[in-house]
Length: 610
Ligand code: SF4
Image (cartoon, rainbow, N blue to C red; front, side, top):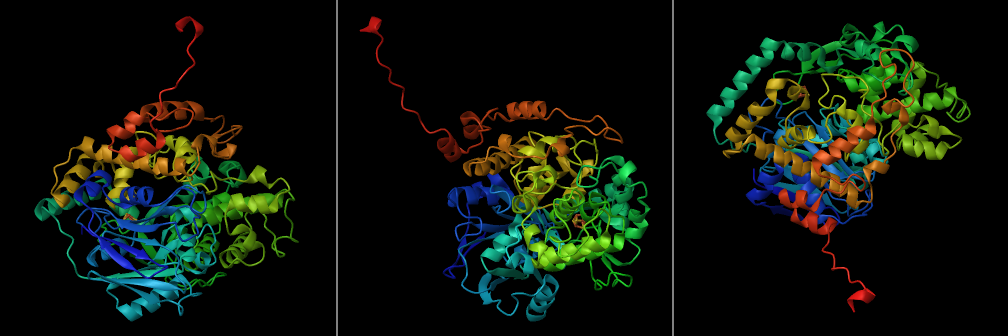
């Protein structure tokens, strides 16, 4: 759309910028453009919950285009959870709608005096009072705003968890699609920014619509023939919770257990149980996979309302095997609580698992937990504590800022069970397992430690990650991207058809590399060297498990890091990208900042030279 919005929440000033084509060429979109803008306009060391932390929401060139899965937007800011670069990614339809409203992205600075939301319609933006929405959950917020602005609008918002600055708070759209990671819901809360509403009928310009549509048709045919679409449509991402719990894919009992031993019966997580109360299948904007689903109201022990989202794999893993829990309805209830209060389910499940292990080891007792018996697999306790956490009540208040902060607050040796990476709870794929469905594969071992947003599994570290950075910047879905023919040449042809540029694959991958460098240098500038970042030894198999599918697996993390740093041309001690690498990528300002010109050293003349 060629336009970005900048909103100062302290003054209420709204300005529009038309970046030159170079920004789009070099950084593509999404967190690529986000990283470039935050690096240039934000100082190091700002308070992540203060007025100077810039919070951005950005689409990619393929968002709102005929590209399959072109439904994503990304949120960016300095992460209050890790203190370094933070981003989160969501589907739904907000990304396309933001473009229909006329903008590629919106950036916020400052803090509003009272709760507000931003309404954007056909190239006009206005801050509106959100006092009546403050304290409301995400479901009610979305319903209220869509009633006010019409069904043809799209809403993203935070819930009470974000308002109360829970550092694992997230941003929700469609009552359950989450931009979950990095604690960016707390950044919105700190700015008193309750929501955004996007609406409009502007056309996303497509340079060569005929080719873009043909590529879409070809790709759908390929995905159908492979069975990929059908599988994801029918079961979503939650079709293998039982298998994953036993194969070594999903972590078990706070990453310390072994599925086949600690959780011998995983039939409760079978895919048919996950869709047992499914009402209808849905999906993100124009996605043929439509891998999402809406549940009927809970009629058993857990009375969640109709409209609760079908469980995603990550949520099943976090509240399921990782807590030794196989009761699907309780996971649905916990997911509903997280979605309606606006909390990341991955982090929330990881926190409950940590608390359960502390409880097992007597570090916390019923006296600490408001009488809740936090024993492994106790699904009632899991739901009760999740409710306390999203509301920041009682012991839930101790937990609501993530495992790292809870460890500090609890003390008494809780660090032994403090499974996180640099402050963020891990994604639900154990990187010790060679899993062909994870983009990172074993590279995840390095990524959980080294990536600018640690705790992810959807990216990769080193040159293998460039394609994933490109995908995220383009605004397309990582699930579709799992399918091999959705990567590589398809991406190149689609992005050229949409933008009208004639870019080689090398050029696009270089953009991915450029993005990787800026994200990383942003974190370095905050004083974080990932080599010094804490990562719980269980994640990397130290010591290795003695039994089960991962018995004896203890990857050589240091070797992975060593070779990847070399391949990136980043220093193997400081992890600073070399000056030459930064200049080669056109990141001259980063090169100057990281490698300021040195004065030629002056030495006393040796006696023999006098
Ligand atoms: S595959 Fe699923 S998550 Fe991805 S765009 Fe389609 S519906 Fe959304």
